[in-house]
Length: 416
Figure 1 (cartoon, rainbow, N blue to C red):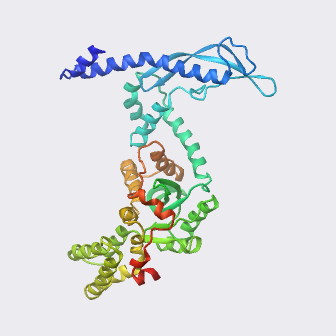
Figure 2 (figure 1 turned 30 degrees about the vertical axis):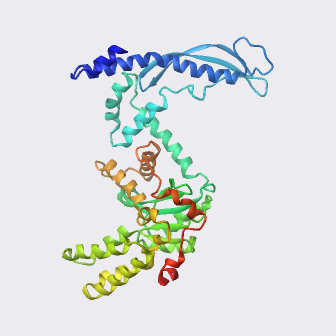
Figure 3 (figure 1 turned 180 degrees about the vertical axis):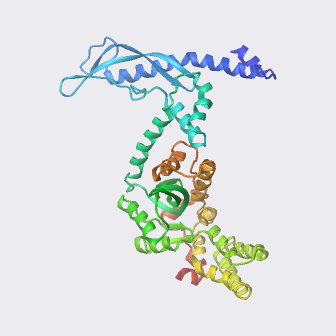
């Protein structure tokens, strides 16, 4: 190993790849032994006895080995996997199967994850095969390998979208739509993927649901929410939403008592659309005085000042702010450490941004399922990670209902 270290420390173009290759070869030589040890330990646990041991707890007998190939991140490995016959409940003997090294697996999960990661990162199937060939050390990778992996992911997705949500204790729920071009009814059009990201009691974010709908009207959002409630999801404490009127009406029906926070980013865009560009910077500054205020009282004072000023300068801007009302200020009722996360629907917007980067070279999708599987796969493969919200340390205050100091809330905000 000293020779490898010396090669790696030489600042030459040829020595660095060579050192990495030598190191990989050294590790690859140990892979077979590692896999064999794992299989032996698992088999011994299944047997209930060691080699040649005669005990009443024995549940099976060995019967030789089987030569097989397994591709890991260090290339193809040929190994001798032990075999055994287990005693079945009806007295018949059945072949033992390793749960860690499945019988028909040709690649370990780490390599499969790398394949999916490349695919979900925007690399097409042909380029995936080219890109991963050095990693696999020319181990066989059939033309349909990615297709089979995606087919398995579809099965996983279908199980995920039907899973029971009764055990999810969701404090906050982010709801928004992601628009994509997809073929539906024989024609390509822009359709929304409705997305729900929840925040658990420990501050972790979790993707709860994805569904393609024909629009973002009340019926679409109501059906989306009803599906989650039918699977056991209880009402959250706070829903963070965009300005969709359909979503607001759906919440009125499904969870009328749930507090709502309107996304301040969506609202700012709407405000700016009501005024010429020369006024945008001034509107933005006045709006920020509201949503970035030090406390709820200061925010309400800035809100009233905004309306007085812009009713004179641009009535459409003032009406747009009034449309959102005190739902823009709901986040002030929660721990200050969490305000950054609760002001916007950025939890969904980030997923949207990653999705846009992934599909920028793809004009449309062939089906609704293909869109959903790709979005789901980006999270399942680890390409997109959902982090805890800011101020997750203060979640116990929220779950215990001690987060609101009503003495500091403006009277109008309390009535909202």
